[in-house]
Image (cartoon, rainbow, N blue to C red; front, top):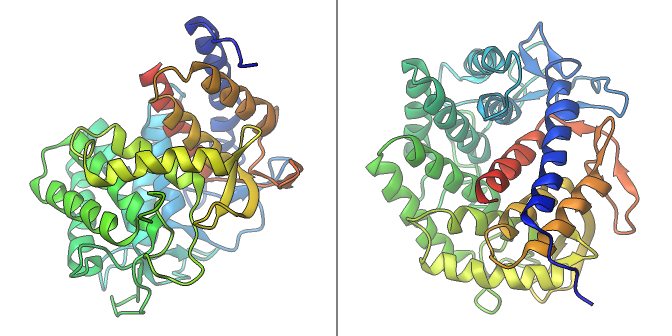
Amino acid sequence: MSNPRPTPSELSTCLASVREHFAERIVPLWQGPGWNADMALPFEALDAEHHPLPVQRYRAMACARQLYLFSSRIEQPGAAERAAALFRSLQRHFHDAEHGGWFYSIDADGKPLDRRKDLYTHAFIVFACAHYWGKVREGLVESALNAALEIIEEQFARDDGLYEAVLGEDWSDLGSGPLQNPQMHLVEAFLQTLAVRQDDAAQAALVQLCTALQAQFIDPTHGVMLEKPRGTVDNWFEPGHQFEWFYLLDTSPLLRGTPLHASISRAFEYAERCGVKDAAVLASLDVEGKVIDATQRIWAQAEYLRALALKPGNEAKLMTQLKALEDNFLHAGGWHECRDGQGAVSRHDMPSTTPYHLATCLEGLQRLL
């Protein structure tokens, strides 16, 4: 028997409850115990008792994600000041003055640790700076945005329309090739740039990238976006990424209706059929739909939620998923990062990168509902 369709007010009430938890139980963790005031950086993760895990590194990507968080639509006291501090820290701690670009990570004392340059980090710097610049319109922020966009095109871009995943400190070729996840976040970064300004170069790069992804990363049978280029041995797909892709493409007037959008629309149905069990989004499957890893991650739940909201007539499913997020992942002390295939909590730390997924999910839901 199907679930009764919830009323708009029931959906709104449930969404308000999740939003309240986010605002009152999660964001304050990163203003208090999760903030290293000496470094002006978020700790990488907190334990279940809200103590920072022993510091081994700070990542530029985590700093950028928190910059997005504190410049997004959270009405939190001190959010604007925190965003300004995070932007300064991104430049002060991670920027490579000699070779350009941003280091992957620094150590506990603030010295460069992993000095490589990776696309994932640079994509998040573009995404966060574009979003932040849209709020503050400061010249320094736009300069950082322009520098990041320029270095991506100059250093990471390949002749086939895709982008190298990782390069050396001095931009030397490490033979990494392209990987799905950094390309996806680069699409997200280009879209965020276009949301705050007209940018013909970013638009052209975005269209070219999506064309190349359709040609080289899409499995033709099911339409799924593979994690490595088509033809790679032991390739796989992640349902959470299909949902994330669907949201990005379906909400973009520029990308909606492209061959990649058509593929990912098919992938949505396949990922939902094979990769969602009892309201839990599974971590990874092979191309034939066999489960490789049944871990349930909060970010994938969040991506499924905001993608579901784009499909009309899905109110009952949306309500089920909202309740599943609330009941299975949120708790008085914050959130559970992961559950295993049997549903037992398998990670007890709370990473500083996760609130970005919850913020984008809630923003998407608020807009759509």
